[in-house]
Image 1 (tube, helix red, strand yellow):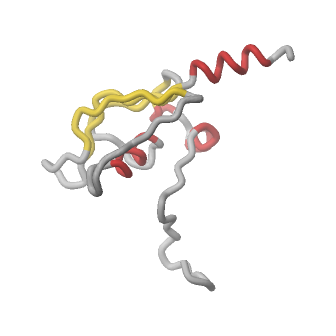
Image 2 (cartoon, rainbow, N blue to C red; image 1 turned 120 degrees about the horizontal axis):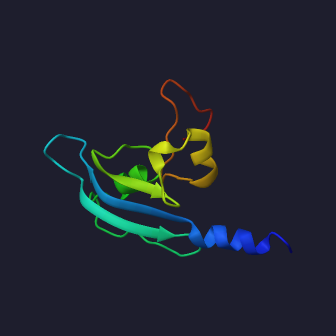
Length: 111
């Protein structure tokens, strides 16, 4: 197919990179401190660690749900903060372990 080569090149170039990430819920108590990593498209990347070590916080920072206090997250070389939310949602997904529902909403079955 004509566009197949360019689609492969775009996928090969896609990556999610973090450089020097810092994040703290409470000032002076960092959850992430100077973290750098790269996850490439088409490759499996695992985040492992004990309970409370910051795995979920890292994922939320990587997808833009939390803003780092220092450092930068880039998607295909472009700063994550420069994406419009709709454009970012087309490229990155986050499915929480326990989905939350908006406050004040009710469920007709067990949530």
